[in-house]
Length: 550
Image (cartoon, rainbow, N blue to C red; front, side, top):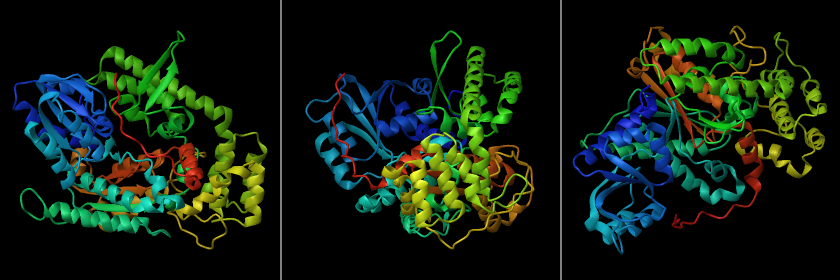
């Protein structure tokens, strides 16, 4: 297995970093220290490993905010976000007594003149290079990116944070533009209809910043629009998908198993606790993640055999380890399913789709919901079912809503349900009704009949925009698809793992268009519900900057 990620966005970002930071690095014989802030640590970790950096002459990686011993004979590379906090930390390394022989400074994005001048004033004589990379997004997967900003949800949707909304949209727009620039795209912008104006505001900001960016092209040429399209949607355009119990491997695992920062913890046969990182460097994970859980267990031994036969097979011990990881994770998922989730899924699917497995329309959604409420399910599961019931009716009456809230015993936490209104989702009866693409002829599992709305949107957008997309032709690799068009989708307020899967499925089926999806952050059902419930709560205190001594 190659050490550097070979996957889509990650490869593009690593290539960009190599062409700038690493190439500058090679001009000097002296080995260097790389100093990162929190964001650039995540960024670099997403697309390369320490061994890759070592090969490029970087021996030490340090935290910008931690106290460090001076190494006067070495030059330091600073890769950081252009914020006052980062610039102040950088100045602290040189203002009174220099820690390093010289500094090579690289910003993820455009640095304001005030910050640049401040830096130049205090330590200009130590700065050998100062560049902007235009990469202020995280390439989480080959076709998925985030802006690493879960707080954007509150800033945009909370009535308590209206003053933060404009700044947040401005920041997100700048990050989206760096994604487009990294992909060398100047896309046309489209919106999905919504009752809120956030998508429209963001689209206007992105268009302005794209124009500004390509007007300042290094070659002095104005870049015209490319074939790519940027589609911006709000989280409220599909409230069903992010709260439904999903039975595909990745979505199910992140919903039911306590996975934090992509790290899965499990117990081995000898009782010791083990950890595994779930990312695309794990070939088994990359192949299994979008499969239905019913297929995963039987596919693991088949894929192990197939990947082992490949000439580029990974280390034998490591591969046995990843096989064990996925057998354990699959077992964890199935235990949750059999214990609790299986009983919920039929009711959830009937409410979401509006018909049962035979295609018979659900005439009385309350009859579907009632068994879930009467069963001793957890509070979160009942809230999810109640929300699906309300969404299926496009809102309910005040009287009925109060009864449901009492039944679930969330009188003190009714914001779990009421705050969906801040996302433009009707909670009290509404007459609007949206039509969906007919998928009754598609093969699916009875407990996985719902299709994320974003998948409909992807397919329709590609079909309407590119006649060539209708022509079926073979594409042997992702690189061939890149010669066609791109559809970049940004969801304001978080994306779910099911929606991420849709990007891969549509890319695979259409072939002439690569779909890339992103958001401020990724959400699991429980995280989204907690965020919704907290929208009316007072704002927490802002982060402060301190040097940590080790």
